[in-house]
Image (cartoon, rainbow, N blue to C red):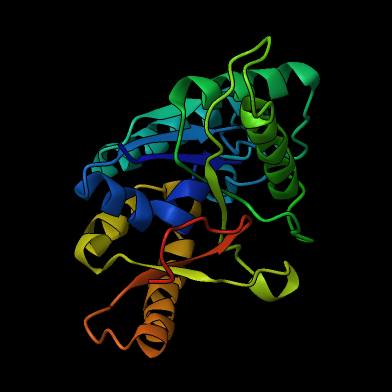
Length: 238
């Protein structure tokens, strides 16, 4: 069975960058899990702080969690919140062990997360580094060992907000046309960053244009782009 794990630095990243792919995977019968490393309560919740500068961080966490849960429910995916904090997110050995266990328990066939570089966001590269390390620890033994080892999951970065300065080179496009209404609905749940809805709606259309040109599939209306990090192993060139 195909199993998709999405590791999101903040509690909205999975919606903007891979929401359509999550919904499409659910539609196709895959098992999915979203892991939010933080709520994005400090650096990703500008609209909430603008509404009330005297809010507490804990109150923002509650709002962000509710928004992310509502979006996940629209996609039909379970979601997990680790509360690692943001701006800055700090990665410890204990947190790597926690993420390694999640990967080992879920045994994903595909992992989606951030890019290794993002000059405008301090947490996204840390999420990449944590995912890279935890993924290797969950499958790196290669043979029976003193700890559980899973089959190596495929691993992709989803598209960052400013791909040109993040060394993002998309090589995989997912047709999300059939579920784009769900992505729109989920994006509209994210009231702390409502200004991004228009941007990511337009991006879905632009990436669909690229997908049509690459594939000749004229029916693609909306798409999401990803960059793979591992070679593909197959028994056919097709």
